[in-house]
Length: 337
Image (cartoon, rainbow, N blue to C red; front, side):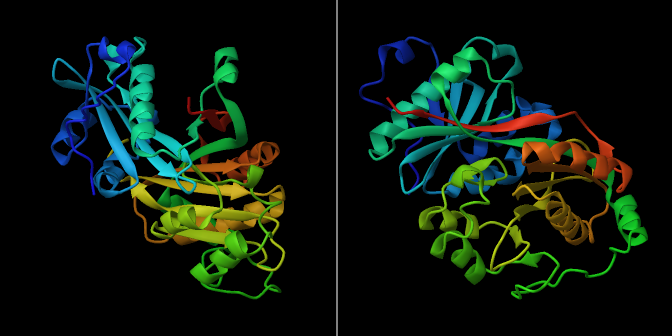
């Protein structure tokens, strides 16, 4: 059941009540106004246009708007995960003319108060950042894990030709193999995913700080979170189902507002073996660009020491373009007080 759009809180903290902002639950009717204030956000890789409608339907999520004189000036989504113990903050954006005025902090405080009033078991607030953390951030947050961010772009047609030149144009990876002797990456079905991530400890040494990071969302490997992940279009892959060293999750490509015929491909890579990571990267590229026409922004998240050799492989072997130099994805959390 979705919460009411009025968002009246009987004990709104005085500091929030004096900001002059109004807070409402987002609706389908707000979409155009939200997109108008979101132009150029996240470097054109904004995922909100493709997820907005589904977010509004998720029972464990609230999408909250801040309004000033009736106009939408900020948005934040909060999702309750980890068996109801974690508030995951996503999608934060502030209208350009309101940035630098503390609006984001006020909205986060409001959302925290709202979540605490409705989900009494929530203990921590968790979010994923790609900006440089400063001294004040370290006072407020503790770091859960870090991944290097490798962002490349290419023409889907050019990449397919290049993969063919490298002998990787066919179906070189079985779609549902479970053989531990297979030297190629193994794409997992739901039974194998459950066994590896929930029923055994095989992934403990592979996942960074026992965290599944899927397209910026950090999850603990618990049944309630896996139920969320199983509803998504994701390719799950490992090098070996009996003794995994490298694992990866690839989100199916979706359109992004950079321009016409631009797609975004997100690959989360776990493990420290470069050769195995490279194999899985190629498998994901081969499958998910096979039917694409247009341009692709591909973002790979991987263990920081693997960033440089993987970037060199992308540039020198795949002949794709590096969009930016090394940056980090940091999963951070703070206690709910």
